[in-house]
Picture 1 (cartoon, rainbow, N blue to C red):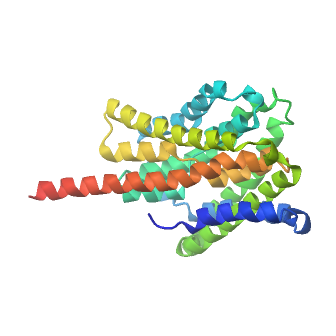
Picture 2: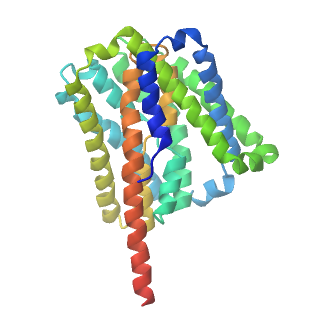
Picture 3: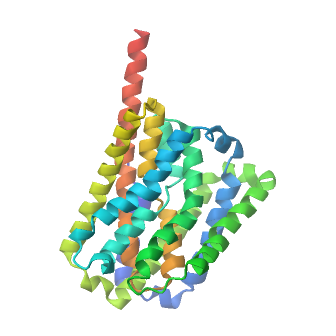
Length: 324
């Protein structure tokens, strides 16, 4: 496995936040990250290819399974884990895990991994893009049921408006500007991706700084953190192998099975970082809320890369066998 500098930097940002949490008071990180979030989705609108999006449009059975996995099966699985958390829905750890379960799928890594494994790339592009749009409604809607009960300050209409202004509006502007700047954005996509990652790292730093300053993690034991890591790992494998079995039952081709398993298990750190800022604001628990998606993001990159390579080798072997 190749060294992933982005994952290493994310966890380094937590370390810096632990030793130097005062950075959020010295620098205008709130303003910087707000602008950065808008630019992330502006650039995404510029890079999104309508032609590739349309190619995957008619594969409705795969779309249905992937979206149900992302926004229904995942949250329901986390709900089923409630008994192992002492305070139930009032548990900060469980709420953090539930937040992970309600997030949309990631875009770029889903497409890259599906391509590597010889899966259905147009279907991956369509689902990853659609998932981000559905998540703007689905994620806060799921959270509204439990944040209201736990006494959290949650106004669904206000949050949707904020998400529209920070995600949908920049995305629409990017789509309108595609004719002028689309080729430029696709040419320099790696540079733009570096900007995306920098913004996420700043959000992680500011969130964990707020949590460390408030003493939030002093109330969380190592046993609880171990439970969180184990639960995240179990969630991935249950969903991954469950989607594999369901794909076989439905008679999916190998390319559609790959796409369903990879897109249906992915969760977006970009959307998670954005929604933490919008839904939870500058609350003391934002670092803890972000922790499961950071762990899951790291695991999904490593595990899906491994499975993608296995699928690729298997298909290459079968092709060579047919030639003989």
